[in-house]
Amino acid sequence: MGAIEQLDSLAKEIVDQNTCPDLASSATQLVMGEGSAQAEIVLIGEAPGKNEDIQGRPFVGAAGRFLDEMLEAAGLSRQNVYITNIVKYRPPDNRDPLPEEKAAFWPYLMRQIEIISPKVIITLGRHSGAAFLPDLRISRDHGRLHTVRYHQHEYLLIPLYHPAAALYNGSMRQVLVDDFLRAAEVARKATSFSG
Ligand code: URA
Image 1 (cartoon, rainbow, N blue to C red):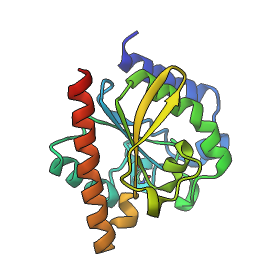
Image 2 (image 1 turned 180 degrees about the horizontal axis):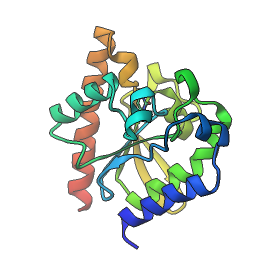
Image 3 (image 1 turned 90 degrees about the vertical axis):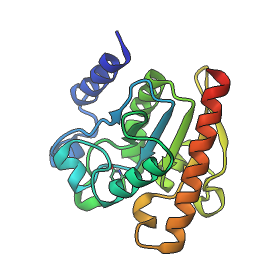
Image 4 (image 1 turned 120 degrees about the vertical axis):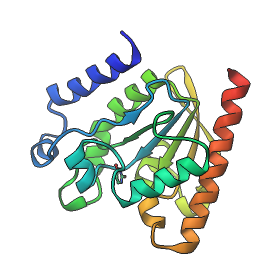
């Protein structure tokens, strides 16, 4: 089975296994993620919001437009990265995802990453950053390069601020843009060195 089919079958499994039934019943649909199934960079947000829930695609609202701008500034596009969230159903009223919801989706997220097998993981916001780095302090650790291991694989991980948090805050916005460009550069180097 190719990577696209494996991702499709993982999405079906999430639904069939009745993962987070309360969220599943209040959400419109599962938002699995989108982009290249062979991407070198996977971007991970928190959970779908209202627009994502309606469209079934990650990061399609205001934060998503900002993310698109940063991708473009870094010479990337949605077609050559993969964008997803830890929690794949919209939490009601856009509340923060609960620890048990993040825990329920974690094994699926990691299988998703193993299928895509990227070099670099970019987390967006403290929820997805702290899922990989339990001691994360986003104000201290944003933009710093980490290495995480899962099963036999090693990934470079760069935690960034969430684009929604930076959207209307000029100085944080610039920090995020700078971090993003550096993260893209790390990814480019990691990709060209290891083929
Ligand atoms: N915020 C997120 O964390 N993810 C989305 O998909 C949209 C907004």
